[in-house]
Amino acid sequence: MVYNENVFQNRVQAGKLLSEKLKHLKGEDVVVLAIPRGGVVVGAEIAKSLSCPLDIIVTKKIGAPGNPELAIGAVGRGGVRVIDWGLARRTGADEEYVNQKTKQLNNEITMKEKRLRDERKPLEIEGKIVILTDDGIATGATAEAAIKVIQSQTPKKLIVAMPVAPPESVKKLKSLVDEVICLSTPALFWAVGQFYQGFEQVGDEEVIRILNSISS
Image (cartoon, rainbow, N blue to C red; front, side, top):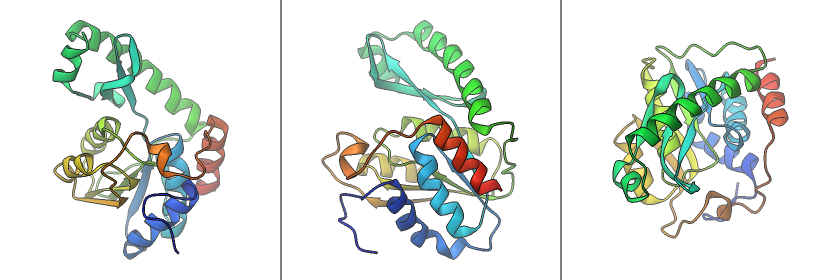
């Protein structure tokens, strides 16, 4: 499969390319955990290639005061959080602000997981090889929160597989997990969407459809 190393056609192609790097795991006890929503499209291709289960892991970024698009950290299930306190304080976010946002986002995570799973129970990952994926990462805060949640459930091995991420984020993730697979690490990185020809928004209904199709 030929592709421009800095531009993917779409999330499906990115997932297929990642699958080629992971095909040696076929037949192993593997679970793919995808960060919604775009990550589920990528994760579905990996799960289909490896004939393994697919589930979601929901994280929420904590936006800076007055600038919700600037992530000062992220929250995962069960109160797990990753905070860049230096950045937080520079933006005027104190501990009270972070605690308030953490509580709010925990409630949102619980509701979103319930809605997207559509009555399905979370997959058991203890003792399994877990592949964590998304359609790309920028700062890595949401991925770090997801990693903490996964590691609390003692998987046998944790692999992060991403189509694209900046070099500094990949370096940090390598210090946190067993293996990182990233197809493209451009130095000039503004947003994940710049590395896709097609980067349409993925709705909740599409996520539910994909999860149900993989589990059926």
